[in-house]
Length: 261
Image (tube, rainbow, N blue to C red; front, top):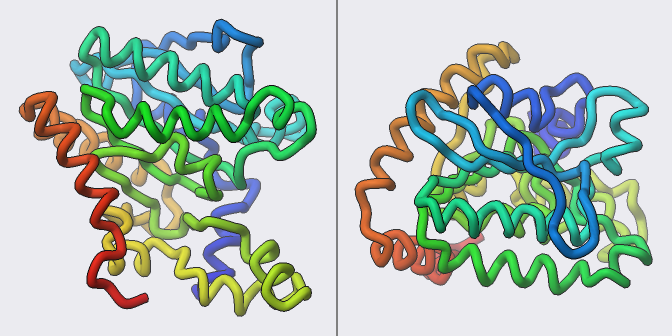
């Protein structure tokens, strides 16, 4: 598939949602609600559960499973309270030394008036800053769309993984084409230039691993992902707090250094 075909695959309504991955990977999941400032955001689901025998905090963006559910969850585009809820759970995980898993599938943070009034930009910025120094292991997995700051606010992690047909970009191909050429129909061309595929991002050192989609058998994908996460968290949990935060900081500070796009 070319770059834009992978974007379409990432957006496919038949693709498993964040909750589908969460429920397959984590057992005994208990969802928490609210940001303790404004309210609850159904676009972000978070709580505690078990990855095998390991207690973890897991947070996912959820697009919804049918039309009614998608509307109620704002198609996975979070409001500020969603990011603040996520940060509240991450800080709680740090307190109890639970690893954090984030499952990212969003076209981007909601950009409506009410989101801006409630501090969307600040909520995302606070997540970026706090995640960089969070003293517990963090792994982020882009399972579908990883759109702009709305995705990055949950993806400042020790390890960033992507499914092979996911997409991760600062802007949608349509948005990029509209800005550069005033023509959204040139989205295929924009997608190729954006370098948003898992293979390209791995080549550039912006992600750490590409998860095979097993020819569309997502049950196998979930089992494979569960196994890999269990192994990775065991390795990261052996690091000291200082080693974890330094590794994460250096990972993001050196992105793009001595690399040619």
